[in-house]
Length: 387
Image (tube, rainbow, N blue to C red; front, side):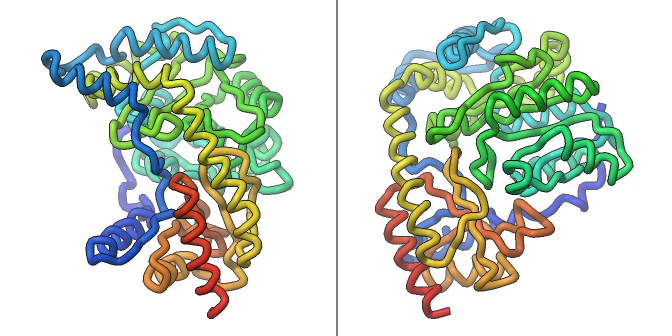
């Protein structure tokens, strides 16, 4: 079992610093537009809200089994059959307190201190920080045009060889944060097969599923029974603050993960589980939000290069634009701070996602409204012109 160690090596999450300052300025009455965090601009589906209201008035909300309520787990079985034409056993599904708990449980169950785990660079900083906090060795594999912005067996072998380690795990997000990369079925299966062949644990982060725009959306549940899937109701289902997610586990790991979860979390919040069960069948309301994100994406895909912020990766999924700011700065954190102070627009410095090259990048979230995207880019355009 992993023990906490090397905690001083955990990097700061600069996006939270930017968000805190944005909130402070907003409280002062400033007209702040926050494009810094991946939080949907719409409320939870009405079905979820109604289900929660009924549950609150109908009786006690309490603990559930550590694996989660049976109706939610069955709803997720139906989800995979409906969206991915795949039948899975409800016994492989565990409901979690957001995807963050899922990552903690997966890392604790799979790895020992000192094990090497590969992630993409640029990539979500919490991966790196949780792995480091648990005493694991993080192998950051650069992704770009030459790798189609995703991990591949060749890139994993190259970086592991350069680091002099044997990989014990690989974590891939599709769609990815911050790049918006969607790894297609063929490439995803090739990666999963390589992990199986080399006895490497494969964790698939699928929390942005549902938010893709013409790209092929595949889940590893379709072809990789030994992989761990982590998903969430925070993005497509717009339930960020409800802190509810799920895992699909290989049968041999279910009991081990359940035992860890019993001690760390007892169970995911029952109220959120009830609401999530209803959200799974919200249908048109969910697709309406995806359509709104696509409208934002189409606008920014054209507008950002026009104002001098060229795209560093395709905007195929999630709700992020990863842009190049090197013509204006070589310090993305300082740039983000100045932009917030002088335009009242918050965005996330790329240094969060890429410690080596992120000084020249900025992540812009388009999870909000089209009006916010239009106003924010107008403000930034005028500011960049003055620079």
